Structure formats: structure tokens, C-alpha cells
Image 1 (tube, rainbow, N blue to C red):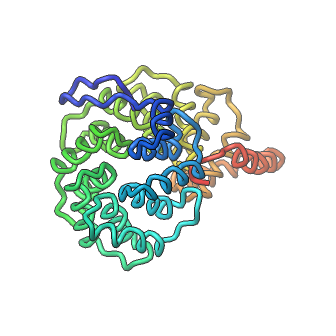
Image 2 (tube, rainbow, N blue to C red):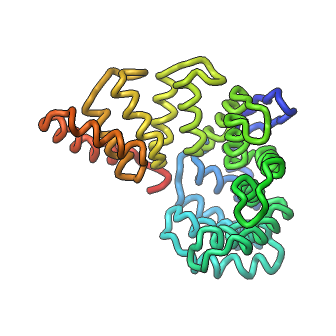
Image 3 (tube, helix red, strand yellow):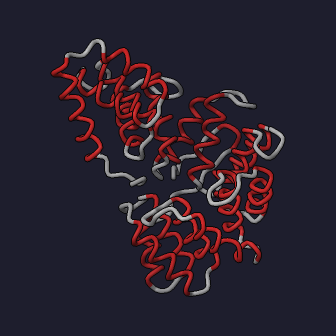
Length: 320
């Protein structure tokens, strides 16, 4: 998280936690510190990404009676962090916890219904569960309720409420809340546009390896929007996002290689990154790839296709 304080709207983000101190406290049996350490291993903040360690700390906290930790074990199965994605397991873990009023459990039940994962998709049920989570103070649920209000999914679209929920989540240091609030300020959705504040919020989120925030920071640096124009920083943030399979970032890297912005011009790399983004379903990359195929030589195309596999091998990611 970013310990600088955005000036606009009096949004003061919390200082980052100290992983070393949290780990020391967790090792003495402090349950809340165990949860914080697990979250740091999930996000790679202050340490490496290590889902095995994250799960072990959550299970240890759960064994000591923490319902929040148990709910977060369920979240590992929802996201597929170090385990296979198993909606049935999420449902089995979160349902009894939600009945006890555990806010995080409502979050992941709501997400199951929002995306139709293991249950019939039902945005109304999703909104009801996620509202309970937000009312209970869960930062992930609070951010997600903001998303529902921003989109009008299961609730009447209300950008003022979206901003309120994003802000509440961001003030708890949640990367989703920070990134989503940054998007509102970048796009000027329901509020005055403030790309400088958006950049600060994205940075706070990107430090926690939020791929969307990393990608949007790259866009801001590429365009000189709210930050000084810097193609090298744009490339670096796009690359960080690409580690998490952010297809838009992969497409942007292809563009930088094509134009020689922030990196030496390299048509084979441009083709390879564009092809990777296209394979992930990015429409913009798919359109560009059609044009590039008519311009690249057969030999360079073969080398570029080999490069795709090399790029994938280098990107050791949270999503893997």
C-alpha cells in the first residue's frame, strides 16, 4: 500500500503493514497477524507469492478458532490460489460461516452467485450477500458492492454509492477498492476527473500486485496523464500486469515494441506479445494481429511464435 496521502477528497490511505513484524507476531500465536501474513503471501507484499505458506497460515489461524481465517481458506478455493478452483468447496465452507454472520463468507457466497460458479447465476442474491458482507466490514465485499453499483448489477446503478464503497474499502488498504476508486477518478465517473489522484490510488493497489492497477498505471505513464510521460515506466508496469495474465497489458507491450517506445523497436517481440494477448481473447490484439500477419516475413513470424512460448515460460504468475 502507498503511505503517501492523496490530497483530493481527503483520502488518506493506511501505511503498509510490516511483513517482518507481522511474521514475528504470527509465530508467537497472534491470530490476526497469521491472517495478515497469509494475505502478504497471497499478494507478494513484503515477501514472495507463496500460496502454500498462505494456506498453512490460514489453516493454523482457523484451527485456533478464527472464522475469518476459515472464510479466507474458502477464498483460496474460489480464486484457485495454490489449489484447484472448487465452487462446491467454497459453498461448503462459506455457507455455515455466513449463517454465523461472518462477513467474508458472505462475500464469497455472493461472488459465486454473481459469476454463476457452481450455482445458478443470480445477481439479486449476489447483491444481497455482498451487501451483508459490506455491512459487516469485509473490505473485499465492500469493494465488490461498489462494483455492483457502478455496473447496476443486482442493484440500481448509483455512482455515488459506488464511490462511497470503493473509498471505504480503499481506506482499509484493500487493493480492489484502491484500483476501483482509481478508475472512477481516471475516467471521471460520477466525480470530477483527477488522473493524478487516480495514479496515486493505482500505485497503492499495484504495490499489492493488482494487475488492473498495474496496467492502468502503465497507461497513465504512456500517455503522460496525471504523471510525467515515461515510456520505460509504462513498459515496466505493463510487464508487471502481464505476469498476472492481463491481456490488455500484453497488447500494450506489443505496441511499445512495435513503436520502439521505452524499449528498442523489435517487430518479432511486437508480434509475439500481440499474439499472446490475442490468444487470451483481447479484441484489440486480435485486430492488430491480422494486420501484422500481412507485414511480417515468414521467417520472423516463425521466430515470433517461438518467442510466445518463451514469454509464457518467463511469466511466473499469481494466476498460475
